[in-house]
Length: 128
Image (cartoon, rainbow, N blue to C red):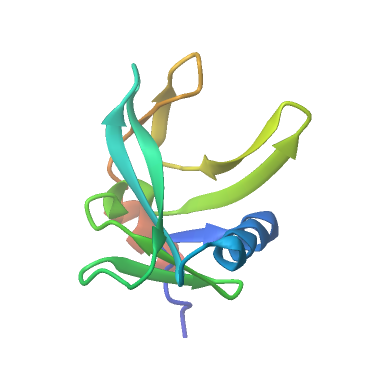
């Protein structure tokens, strides 16, 4: 039986950081909502917001014990994405390894995304 396809997945570091964010929140939070918005010179940037209560119509991903909801307007652009959390000397941030990314601006503030190739995903799921 094939595994159900996840819109996106989390690394251990991302799951740990999201758990910390939820635990440190001043209000009851059940997870994060990920989306995209028009921004920057390359086209779009990723958005993240606290989720106090799930929004009807959002796609739900549960990975490594963490709940993430995806704005349905972003789903086609996030299929297959791996969300990570990276910490370094100059700062820390969530990063997205997105197979639908076709470009990025020089400053790293925005990316260009194309809709996911549903035929390729179906073929991959079927083992073709």
